[in-house]
Image (cartoon, rainbow, N blue to C red; front, side):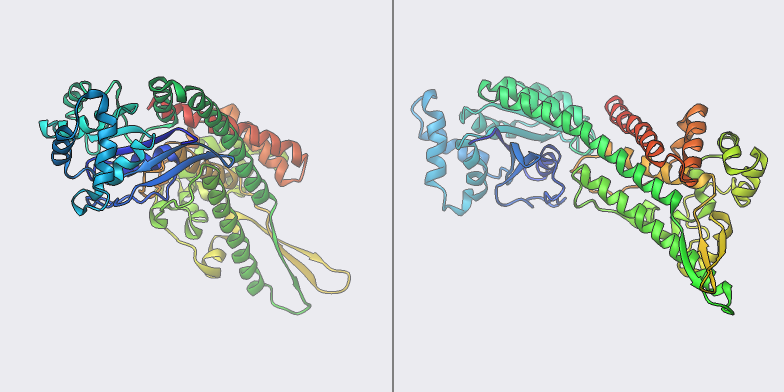
Length: 471
């Protein structure tokens, strides 16, 4: 094998595929709660920039360990011949339907793979597991044991004591919640188990750390671009002489909101791809981020700023917006402060189509009319002057990013964005953001302000990994 390769083995339904998905960073790995869902050994390479650093092999569950061990013991002369006897078993039973699963899982091991043996820490240890552990010891390959607490870790101590008699290294590893630091720790451990892999895995850890830093940088730029565009965007339509304005205004309000909804959704998909989430399962009702929710202004205090924080931001941006703090808060927010008690994730006042868009039009942006020399008028809607709107976009983007950082590729649950995040900011950060947003609205120093916003975002993205490591 040209790169370090690890066969993930164990009994059916003990989380083998979940560990493969997490360590290979591949959310296409098939995970099923039903026992025996993996029937063929399949290799999943872990790649960075197209280079394979190591590979994980998902294997079928061990079914007939006692019968396999009996055959091995009956056909082996001494301990030195054990690895070759395991190979002889696979060759002798490759077409035997009784041992299909055992031959599938042993084949990558006799070809040179290391072993990750997976057990469920929520189930008690039993002597019947010793046969399969003994078979793995016979292979002579580097190995470690992983206690995966599928439901709980009630029996982790029992497993640790039992596994320690067969494996040099035993670790608890929750495939659904193990942050990046835990994943890298396993790689470093394998480097110590086999000197031949030490340099390759040390380099793999370094490249993964460097890639993570680049991922945070890319995510911060994507979010900064999305917010910058949202603050400057407007929809326009020529209005001929004598044409009624109200139908066009309703259409422009709908087009405006539709565009920004799609732009936010595009940004989320791009950020997910940066972190290698290509098949992220989502429930749009739980996610609460689709078109009806972005412009559900009753919920803006959940993702954006509350009344007190909004007043601080308004004070910082008031002069730039052409008014004092009171005018900015009461006027620019379109009376949203009256909606503060309705801090909820339900779809209150959901906006679908032009009617809903028209309902909230005055709360989000304003209409402008300009004369056209050739006749008629140019009717525009936007950009948004609402102080809380960019904070809403920021809060939603940061919460989405935080959940990605706390997630593994084995987790197939839907993202649930129903927590406020921006209330953790300091007042000086809120004031700085308000000034940045005001300049971006006014098309002032756009490149510089976008860079400053991306720098602040990068710091928060990096903190999300630190918080995950502490939890």
